[in-house]
Length: 466
Ligand SMILES: NC(=O)c1ccc[n+]([C@@H]2O[C@H](COP(=O)([O-])OP(=O)(O)OC[C@H]3O[C@@H](n4cnc5c(N)ncnc54)[C@H](O)[C@@H]3O)[C@@H](O)[C@H]2O)c1
Image (tube, rainbow, N blue to C red):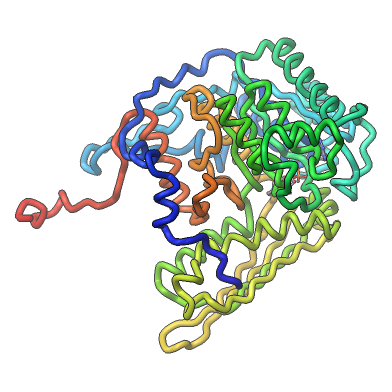
């Protein structure tokens, strides 16, 4: 594993000069109330999107619980441990109610949410049939789709336009029309569509001007996902990216997000194997245990697996999955422990398993005096069952961010992503529990509450004597 850490903190601190103190003072800003309807615009109406929509509707009808959603089930400790204050997160911050969510989607495959949920094969009939009419009412709008960027799909429900700008303008019209039709007060857009082929950041992504010129000239480095993101930002709609595509993680679209004060977040929902990785590797580092190799392999048989069977889409996913260990283990700081890690990730398309993925990890570690040991993980997870609550939380928190006027990158939502976006001078934080603390501290900061440092000396005699 090549030590690719960013330069030392001194340089980072210098480049962020003048911005640092805000993180310690509670925010003064008022958060607008979550009144009225929140429109959820999903790009892609496949396994994740339909499991999310059907799940919300089942919860609304009392036919299931939103397990896995921090926003719905989590609490937040406030003040000292002796105060016993731990309100429900949703009581602490003003979040949209599930009853106020309305859905729409785009997809190049014309199946409505009912048919698509059945094809995905994630949910049992008991969670689909009673809400069949509701699901049938979610019919995908024609997508901006180009097979060049997702090789294994053949879409028929596709927009036509001479330039990428024209296509993106059609998306803007869709956004405005949905807002009016569904009588929404606010909107959020989440990319739940297929993983696009790997694109390196280039000149067309460097500035907003270059990007918009590229749209006019049909520049190949401008993928459909970027057009959705551009349209969302132009319409002041927060945009989160659940796939590893570059999409909004470019200077050009970050410039637009800052200019319009619209929240953005990404990339790639952190669900199964990578979630485990971001829990186990901080444990190894915390105990100063060494790592010599980490081999991860998966079998999955859903449409996502089929798309990822294409080497170009897999490369996008691979980059997202590989970065995690490097960032957490910091080989440049601990070369004797993590300087020579062999890290391999494989995804194998295996239709019989459908959405029920199986992920194996073989982890070769070493301890005291260099003695080798092994950890084996066999995670039989359900991809979309893990992803759906992440979509819900992102919908609710991105909307909160918008109402709190937090424009630009939402690093506090890195908890949900494999490849989190952060300010250009920063290394993104990957450790799941640091991300969790960051999220809750951001909410405390927003609501004017003290940060929790876990210092705790004040509970002991020596504190008085010091
Ligand atoms: N499920 C997980 O655990 C998980 C975790 C991380 C990331 N993801 C990512 O989430 C995305 C969705 O996963 P899924 O299992 O629902 O896949 P899926 O294949 O079931 O659904 C994706 C849908 O996106 C549509 N699509 C493709 N290009 C589009 C475009 N340009 N515009 C609109 N729609 C388009 C496809 O037709 C398909 O219906 C994938 O990129 C996947 O890699 C999923």
